[in-house]
Length: 245
Image (cartoon, rainbow, N blue to C red):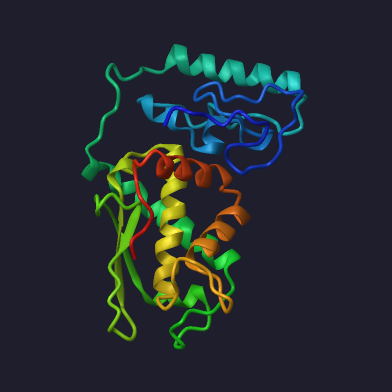
């Protein structure tokens, strides 16, 4: 996906940024608030293109410095990387199988976001909240194209309390980039909600919210607005389709 977030809102957490400051990351070019401007603080995808970075390259800045000193220090840090770090001569390319190590991070983020922002009890009456539900279940995540759906989960409808689940993520999102991480996390929220509420459909009814609405509510509360927009763009371009569960 080539489009970048250009509005004056932090790409990492959605906060409005001070328009008087230069707030583009020197490496990836995205907009960030002062707190997340340093590449390490927003998990900058461009850092993966360097073979070695000193641990203090981006961490020695005083939070109370003025904006001018902040910019000068950042410029020196980036220059240090460009001049003293040996860069890989060819672009990093990982096979889909090798790239899946990062999916566990997305799964953990999705579970934590649900625990924090979704307070309805699971359909399974054995669990009083989502935290205990997640703690007692096993979840696996893999990259796989299931009829072009964004994601899928192996729901066993006839099993009263399913002990384990496998979630598939469309291979369009099979590489570890910042945008993909945020989109995959939202897809995982959606699939985890299917596990928590197997009786619910995608659309809301008069009696209860559907999975789609719950997904959007949680993502918005967690400031994942950009991930929702990027996913919608993929849907509109027919690169992926909505969940078939």
